[in-house]
Length: 194
Image (cartoon, rainbow, N blue to C red):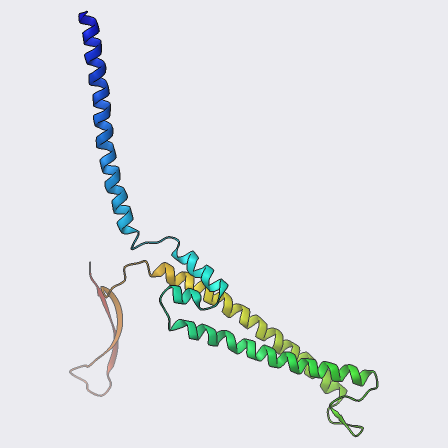
């Protein structure tokens, strides 16, 4: 009987220690989770990918997601310029291409007035080549600007998560030399605080 009582007391003690230790191990985990939740306000690992996705869907939207609203019109203007030149070069290329084909078939084109060619066939060929190159260059620059604005939105979203303050600054200053007043000395002030 004594052995049975000792076994029961041992089992109860053993299980109560496990329950007690489990209760203690859960409490610090909750504290760690609370710290993670509070620090997620500062660090969001998905913010760069969201900004890049929004910029890919509609140019400038990633900059707006980053709350850099002044960058969106710059992106739109930077993308509008190559689009404008692409359309102009493409329409002019079409005009010169159409005139060249008509002239090769012996028909009258827009550059032939009363049987007199105002632009030679060689000039039509050269103009086609130049306009095609300009059109392709406009398209390439538009694609590059599109990709760069996606990268800019992603990098900006990534860098916004860092604590940046004036503890580390680079400011160019003009230092007056008390001995010589003729030419100011240009210097660089570096401020670094811990």
